[in-house]
Length: 254
Image (cartoon, rainbow, N blue to C red; front, side):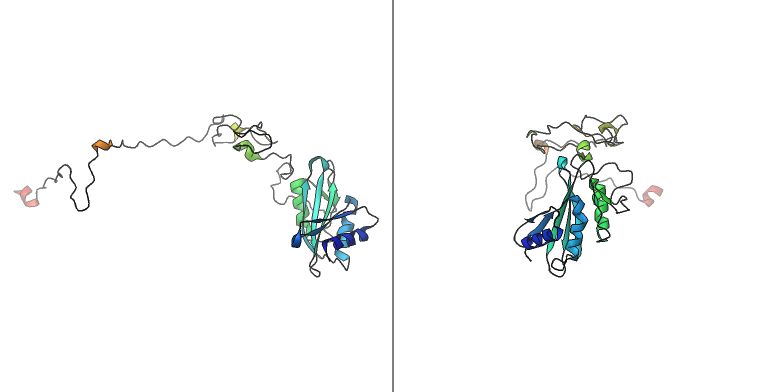
């Protein structure tokens, strides 16, 4: 089946649910993409799995996309090991209440993916039952893959150059932002605060003292250096001082 045929077949199975079909990618990477409402999410996954013509029996992956004010797109990719074709299923949940039904009972392999999506985007999966932390420590606050989440690396060390639209070419034109729970630049511990990171100099708790510079002997001026000998020529310079002969045991006793 072609991607268009896969999409139309899934629309027929989901009727009268209002869904739309399109094709993502191109050439041999083309995939049928079907957008369904959140209420029809489980039905779409089940139909793609159980239909004899589609037979998408392999759960590939699930994740989300932050669309800011429009909410979050939850995307899953299913694959048919028999027919060698795939389908992308996509649904959108509102930002103020990002909840969608879990598909763990249909594909047990989705448990890990739903936990990661919940942790990184804050999307809840109704019926999962075990949305505990997967990659982050339990005390971590926030969802790192949301677009409003401020990277702590920009607080610790500002990026040079224009990194965002509207910034100048000479340097960062954005006001430094500090996410909740991130210490101020002068409170990072014993590491010196880099200059320019929302305040120059070391923090009030002090920094690691720099190593004292080692004194190097002064190099002689070029005119005072002896000329280098040519190949086969004995070096010239002041006569070598021979060490004074030490008296032997017999001389000392006599």
